Length: 347
Image 1 (cartoon, one colour):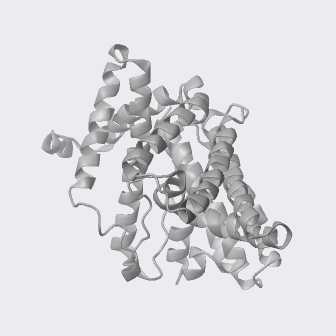
Image 2 (cartoon, helix red, strand yellow):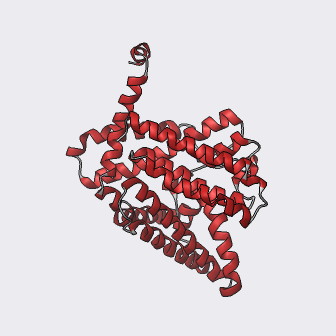
Image 3 (tube, helix red, strand yellow):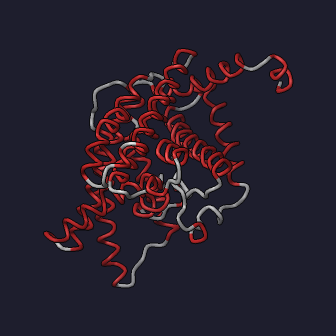
């Protein structure tokens, strides 16, 4: 659970990560791009994978694993070939920020209008909903388990999105460059392809597209043709995403993998590939399912499969309860560190 000692471990982990990134910037960057540079970065990739094990707090280890493993490792792999967001860094501070935080600078800011089209009052509404959910956990004894699971799903999504918005806003203020959007209202998805490719966790989508999808598709095209190569690349991308999530679950729960979350992503990969193939035929015949019908179907499919495969490992190990308890402990910890006059002013 979160406490002073846990905060110290968290700080030590991130100091270690920053030192690793200094090595990448000052030493590995001088090695010619390609497999030679990748070889020099393998120790850093290994350290990024094991560093989260030093933390036991579900929230702190979850975000650390997400930042370093699901994002940082793929950014470093791309950097070894002088590709990806790290290739755009202008100095060591940019490099460390881009590598360790959930941000990707825009290369052409005027062409990306995803965030500009969002209603201005949407973010405060999400903050309010997140606060209501946090308060609702106090009444778990009176709520149906299925309703609690819905609250937990909303809590995970809103907590991650609000954290990413906060990080992006801070980086934008400090460094002055625009950040590519991280989410694009995933609850409005009209298809699985729309959800995974254009709306959910777009940073991971971009990184997996560069590190897995494009290489697999390019190689497979020579053997099975364009159509099958596209499906193969989709399946490979979802498989890699599932394995990375499996590692993140191991970081959080410290329980050997059950492979449920991998099955979740493989299932969605198969269904997304099938959906793309069906749409290709349907569009040629001039037939298309209306969004008012497809959107609820997508949300329902995501909810059912997540309840079946994505959440059980977290729920079995009480991660939902532990993570919500930590929010209260974090507030108490912050209060204990603030001067009395500040607390009196806030209260």
